[in-house]
Image (tube, rainbow, N blue to C red):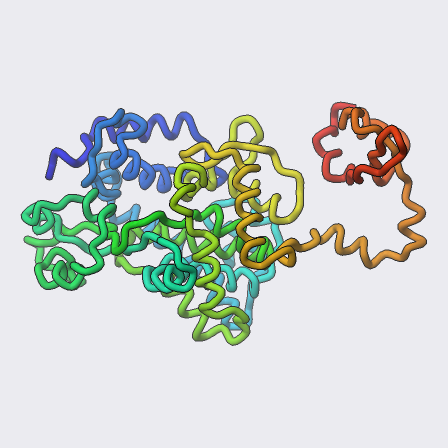
Length: 435
């Protein structure tokens, strides 16, 4: 088993490389916590500094120790981030809600600075936390699989005795990738899965928190869950789903292991009287987020690190881009997740899948356009229009808008037929400073 744990020098090198080459839209200390966890997956998959050498039994604990950090301190900090999200929920349940994703002292949740400025509807955030917290549960995935007649992989993390694992001829890769649903009871009775929360010292050194797959199959895309939740409901629901995913990531290395995203979802279900969605909606989201077997290499499934990673060319994170798309705002086309999936094609997939479930009703009018519908016809008629041909460059059209104080760009062909309308407000932000 030791040969399957990454060497200290490779872990240190990979950590240095991540810190020097990537920026996340969070505080530096939280960024480090996320990088530490990313190294676990990179060691398993032979990525980064591991260069096709696969250390499949490497855990976050191995990485923290190799980097000379205190496991106790790192676990406590990760739990603190979860507790801050929990406190947001508890405040709402106690009828003392927050209108921003911040702590009572004003610190943004997960260190994401834009959360200090973004006003949210706490009710919708709680709805997203409920949906997101349950959609990953293996029982939910199994039920969604039955309802929608598809194949979804599922499993959960357990406290595992790695000495027993080795004696049984297993390793972290086999537990994580093969189906073990019919052997879970056997693993518990055989001591592989440890139920004692305080094992003896002679045993505790072998205890690690590992993922055991119940059923083999394609997983779910966190990107898809966030974007689909936002389109089905609203952007605050999407933020709640994102927070649930963050909890699911962070609680892989905390003082006391448990499914804290699921626990928080159940707390909302029981104690938040105004929750207006049930488990049927969770099954639906689990289905929509499920990656089809023929799309495994075509759809992103961004980890927390990839959701927060800032694209060098655009200065936007994947999360920010998803939120802009949901709200109907301009977004920069970027490649996302470790698969480097082009984001526009991914958005097409999500909207097409939503159509298959909900039909055209899924497409909500963006808030700015909804307000326009409340205007009088006379007011709309007073708006100034700029007419251009389809060959006119966007830059040239926007310059006309600026010069003439226009409100809309109408595109006409050579016969005077209207081909479409462009709202310059969606693009002028990119032209500022150039005129």
